Amino acid sequence: LRNLRGGDIKEGLLDGRLDIGVLSEDDLAPGLESAPLGRLSYQLVIRRRDSAQHGTDWKAALRLRFVGMEGDSRIIASAERLAERAGIKLNYSIRCSSWVSVAATIAQNGGVGVVPSLLEPSEECVAIPIPGLKSFSRTLCLAWDLRRGQLRTGSSMWQRVLADELRV
Image (cartoon, rainbow, N blue to C red):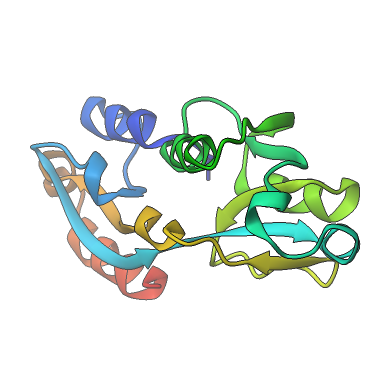
C-alpha cells in the first residue's frame, strides 16, 4: 500500500508498476478500467480550542496557520482560490504527505486545513462550513489496466470485489 498522487497512480497503472489504484475519475486515462467508489467531499477543520478563540467564521479561520498537502493538490489550489477571492492569502505552516497527517497536525498543533470528509474530525477538531466547498467534491474510482488484468488469473473478480468493499 502506497500513498501516491493521482498522476503518479495513473502512470504506475499504465506502465505496470501498479496493479490497482484509487484515484479521481478526472485522472482516468484511456486503457484503464475502473469501478466507481463514490463521491468524496472536503471540509475545513480547525482545532476546537482555536475555534473557541477565533469563532467558526471560515474567513477568520483561513487567516490562521494553514496546514496543507505537499505537492500540487487540486483541492488545496481550490482552497487558495477561494481564500484569494475573500482577500486572504493562506499562511502555510506545514505541508504534509497525507490527509491523515494534515488532520493530526491540526489536532495537535492548531491551525486550519482542508481534509476529505471521510476523515471524521477528532474530538480536538471541529468542521467549519465554507460556502462553495461542496464544489470541490469528486468521484473516486478503483482503477486498473485492463490489459494487465487479463494476464492475471481471476484478477477481474478481485478487482470487482475490492471495488464493492471500498465503496464510499
